[in-house]
Length: 131
Length: 131
Image 1 (cartoon, rainbow over the protein chains, first blue to last red):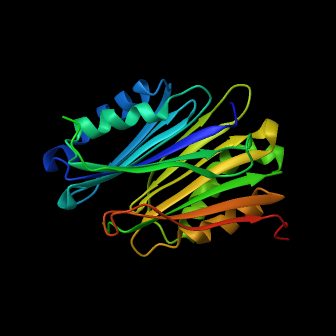
Image 2: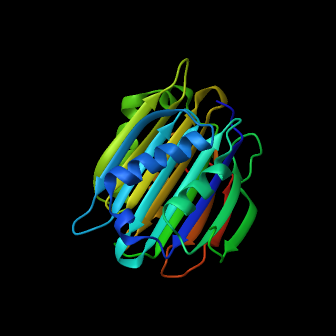
């Protein structure tokens, strides 16, 4: 694996409550996001909390994609961490649209031995819906 | 789940090569790190790359712990992401010592709906070995 990586941290506000607790939907969505980023899925693990909330990770050959949902707050936090030629930023609009997030926050970090320093490359709020 | 979270990003340099490719060791280590942070394990997924390198995630009731290793570079990147009363910072010395990392970098982020902003709380290099 290439050791120079990008790590995109996303937080989604005002999401659709029903979607945030739909395990099948979230699992399929995270795999679709990984594919949109050009990553290759090698494993998954998901867990549904009682009474609500989901956590899941899609392990990819280039690192991982994760999501944690809080339906009671219409909130979700996601991470897209990849090395090599992937485009982790491309996973973000897939999730934001699919979750019907009213607004979002995105932080892009550069990581990995290739640079020997974790660096914040970008940090933005997206207050407007995408549709 | 509490929506106020801490996310600790760690990078480990000069690690023991054999340990970085020992799947059983890395799997047990990541679970031990999660327990040291006070988290409750609810699932795991690991993958071994050819010819070398490992990726793994321990899903916890409070979010997740992940690791990606590059034995050929004696390098590993780890994330400890937890909400609630966990102590994700306590996972770091467990990994650093166990991997025999010569030096490390740590970035601590505050995340989650409770604060409505991802914030860098701490960012440090640890150039000296811990032992």
